Amino acid sequence: MKDAYLVDYGRSAFTRAHPRKPEVDGWAETRGDALLARVIDALLDRSGLNPQEVEDLSIGCALPVKEQWSFGGRYPLWLSRSLGPRGRECATRQIDQQCGSGLAALRSAAREIQAGGVEVAIAGGFENMTRVPMGPALFKEGVLTSPEVLSDATWLELGVALNMGLTAERLAQAAGIERDDMDEFALTSHHRAARAEADNLFEGERLALANPTGEVIDRDANVRPDTNLERLAGLDPVFLEGGRVTAGNSSPLTSGAAASVVMSAAALERHAATPMARIVAIADVGVAPERMGA
Image (cartoon, rainbow, N blue to C red; front, side, top):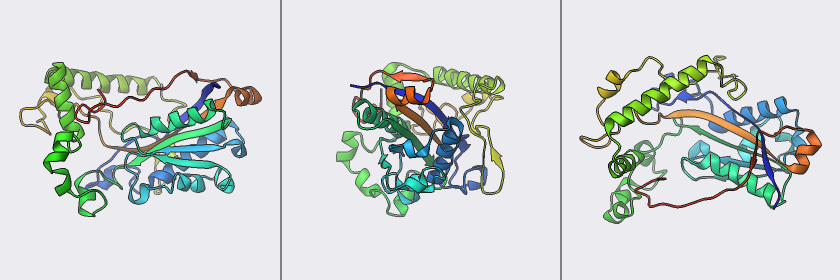
């Protein structure tokens, strides 16, 4: 098996997604696939890589419906200024592995290289949770399985009808993680992100891109450096009465896109590129749905 190397990566800033208040989302007027195409173009411009050498494009999306259905990854390819002209020659795919979809795309690219199928691949992911929201908003349009089906006892027993908040409640209970522990972890996360921002640690990773109004989006919107334990403790549980999971200690809804360049050893040598990492091994493991990843 050949070696696969992560050579470069970049992302947009992550905005605050809000389907009922789209004005708070800097990417509200930007399709997710179009944003990904711009991230890919920025990566190729920065690396100097000839787009003709990109043989494979893997795209991850957790909710690939409506405008986020990308025709097997073709739409981001065609929308890309760099890759579009060679759209008939580059293989594409779109992957749905829920919250791990972007990482699954990276694994797919690495495996293509490890198997000797391609030398240069791009892996990426996108989501615009303002334009394509998850949950009841899609149920009403008949895009997803009806709520009646998911409330059936059989689905509940399988854990399929449990949302992320409820699985988090189950995990916290099973592991003995208390509400105070979760709030303290959330506070630390915000403070670390704010410190990383102040120290310019996202430079080179996060790309400054303009939205259709001309506003340059170059900061992540969900970091709250001024929050404190008192504020977090004052929030009510969202998913379970008397529960632990709140809006303050949960991951936020966001919109954004990210991409990475993966190469074989031969391509690495040909371009005299310095790898960020060698992808040594990959493993996928399933768990019961009610545990969701733990």
